Image 1 (cartoon, rainbow, N blue to C red):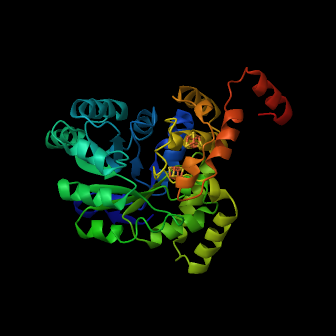
Image 2: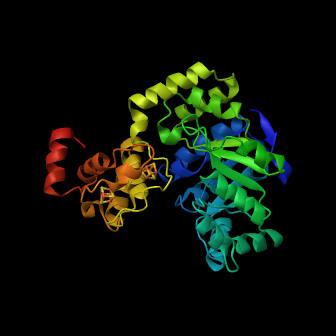
Length: 352
Ligand code: SF4
Ligand code: SF4
């Protein structure tokens, strides 16, 4: 496994690391198997978030016999200082460690959110204080918009940036990697597999590595997937423009048509529906078969999808032309409570 210096942090990380989303859905035994197999093949970067339920606990247990050999990262989506501090204390307990290598502000979607986090009493102060106190080594930030990252770097001394990069969303990161690395800040990419839509892991990972981030983290549910990803890392051959064009053509034909990029352009739903969240819940049902989690999350949506009056505003706004109304119609059937009459009919007809 190729290893890279994570810019000025002094950390040395495997260029392929594991993200924590899947660990909340699989058992401790399965988590151990994946992390131990990855570690055996040279992985040392494990990165999650407080949002991903018990993933910190599972990662902490899996690495407890070789904690000193790995880099642990996590993140908080809290925006206020007291909440941020509590999150860090909880993460330390969850991992079962005295110090966390990288702690990030998670998914800072807009400049408004960034301003809130960076203002007096904002969550950044909690991270800074805990870094000064020695509980975290490095402070990071994750966002989906380059301008948010660049503004954040003007406002504070971040050590690591996490940013989505894959062969579908190529433009967003263009220029950002060199800009960030040029400032001595580590660049870790996320979402290399396009939320599971990439199809060919070899192409997806070879594309990301060709852009030369310091590392990329990938979610893995099964050992077979891990081995495929590790083989792609070991291959590392340059990706050709023809391969990319073929993959993009495939995307035009079908699967990427329903892939929400989480860009938040559609926040103006007159009914107040959180479209991005609803699509994400349905993706997890449809792509990852996280059936119970998806049904629980669907029930908790407020307002729920029954509030949608099919006005179509969101579809007109979405730059990726996602058929949102159609996806919501499917979600309303698939995510119905198990005992409802429609669900029983559906189960009889389709077995799901
Ligand atoms: S179609 Fe539904 S989800 Fe989309 S903007 Fe209108 S009410 Fe909101
Ligand atoms: S505008 Fe489209 S891609 Fe962006 S968050 Fe909304 S549905 Fe997703």
